[in-house]
Amino acid sequence: MKQHQIVSILKWATFSVFAARGFQHIYWDAPYRTLFWDENLMKGLVTNWLGYDWHTYVTSPATDAFLTSMVDGIGWFYLLCAMAALFIQRLPKVAIPILLTGSLSLLFLAFLYCKEHFFFVGQFFEYTLQWSAPVFLVLAYRQILQPSTLSLSLKIAIALTFTCHGLYAVGYYPRPGHFMQMTMNILHIDKASAIQFLNVAGALDFVLSVLIFLPGRLALLGLGYAVFWGFGTTMARIYANFIPDFWQDSLLIWTHETLMRFPHFLVPLAVFLMERVREQVPFSFSFRIGKRSPVVK
Image (cartoon, rainbow, N blue to C red; front, side, top):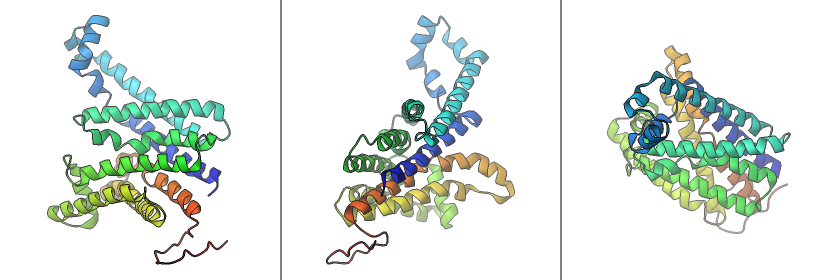
């Protein structure tokens, strides 16, 4: 696997996150009000520094308009980041600072979602592949890390994302209602069966998060499953919620929710291809006991 091919995969993973988050911010919303309207955190700043009464601040149309404009502005910045990802190879001196700034912004967004969900640590780390994709793109393009170190770093990001996803699936954290609804819609099963399915799926998330760190074909098995399951959970957003009679609304609501999760299978795919070359395993490999077959070139 050549370096430019890894960069290409990470480039599209990064583009997808920024494009989706940009659309979300401009057309829908993002949880910035969970911070700016938090009385415990912001009241001192508002009353002592800005000189506003707290009630006036939170009920003011001007405050809401400012926050709306700020969210829109961040959305447009994310679209700029998406373009920077596409042009990193042509305009690296311009693109790289934009991408790194965008990664910090995505990291802060992950914190806001964590805050919105009662500071569940798993909620924060579930976004690891999304906010780290721009960083890994820059690292891969600049060849700052050795391939083995880059692969290990990517595996850590994969494990964090899938492990935290699994914590929700098995019910360690309150199991999201949309997990249940998507499972029932896609598999046409009842609630009890959906819970059993999610328990198994969550356990497999934990298993793959261990397998990818093991040597040889065990790592490839875990990465291959991560590609499959990451793609499945990504596309499930739009497949499970698509209503043909209201196809425009369905696409409007769920396309960006799908697109922002592309790193969940593209990043494991990049690592799978890197590890396959290092292990010299053909694309269609088998788990036979015995001497490894040579790669056919």
